[in-house]
Length: 573
Image 1 (cartoon, rainbow, N blue to C red):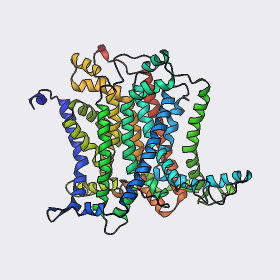
Image 2: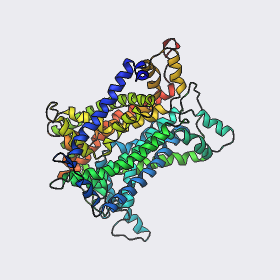
Image 3: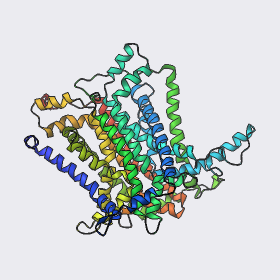
Image 4: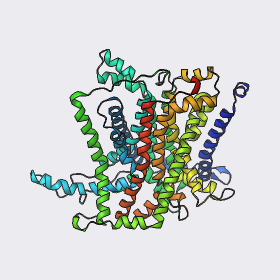
């Protein structure tokens, strides 16, 4: 305690208060909703645990979920890291276009993207199947349905992967920009081939980013609700997130205890992945930013360059243009039909959406909450990551766990906790944007801190040590040295948080209403009414609005990395 008190400064005190406050914001609502099913007449009641373990199809539910989450997460890591490597280390880059291509699917809300793929890949009336069957018939393959069935194992894993690739791409891209590419060039000069350099130099250098991306894949996979509720409910595939929503919202009385029990199983899995990530971050061989920098030439792919660029453009067409085109087509048609009358296409759905006052308010509120939540979340995450790194294994890991683990439960469960904690006295935030902002920051802090952890772990200790020896305190070192070097990773995390918050559906379903309308809640209303035309037009408008924010941020992040951070006046930090 004396050692801690001797090193206490206003900045470290502020960082400690901020970290503890974020931990309480995550734990307090969760404690209110979790303890109720397990406390009966002042005594601990383990009936919910027994009811959870007694679920007749528990093994099938967990196996199906593990297969979908594991397969899609692994595929997303390979695809996202591959796209990031092509973009950052080779001459296959197509300018800003290759920065944006992998992010386009992410700009659509997951429920809209799932509907878009249902419009494309429905076995009988999907637009893609309607286009493919005549082509196959011309070569003697006559089909009454198919050949694609998006309501299947491969369809579900494919759409899961699409929505996880942007997280991997942005985090790994930021990690590659932060590492010294000169080591890779030296490897090639010494005679090592591209694959050997990738395996021995590039991948070890971005291990923190890969670990952060893997942890996010687990969080996202287990928590994703919109995609399986559209694509998996028409098959025999049981997904845990869908079951939790059914127990909370479509069972009377709600089986909250069983829902929490299922989420506790998820928490055990996340704990194992989180522990593995902490081991990676605390390794001695992760730092990538040192005191020297040099420009290197990108790897020349030669004859493979056109194929690499074609693969990137093909990825854009497959994952973005097709589902977006399906939503545009159903919006212009006004309904979903197996036959499209192109002469009757019109903009009525877009006019209805633009003239709807509720939708206008929802769009404005969501964009404002996205900007505010992402800014607050990433700045707080940067401070917390710095504090955790300085604090060591004890208090640092405790704060890290308090911030990251509660949101591993279903967002619906946490949203109910926020209703219990902040709707009534003494806060009276129910029905306001403030309760949504607090919930969004708390629920998405794991993504924010994961991105900032990866960013700070790549900063060499010699830089902060040099700042300290030059007489700068912790606050000035953080502001003038650590924060600028973390900026590429923080900007990537900011973009992820902004898009996630702006299109949030799970928490919005509980916390939003007529007084604090947001896009997620509005999309659920439109989807429940079966108005696919308005759903498509609203999703397209949201994607366009978020793109207007994400594209400049992505451009600035790359420009900042390319030009570097100007040295402070006087040469001192």
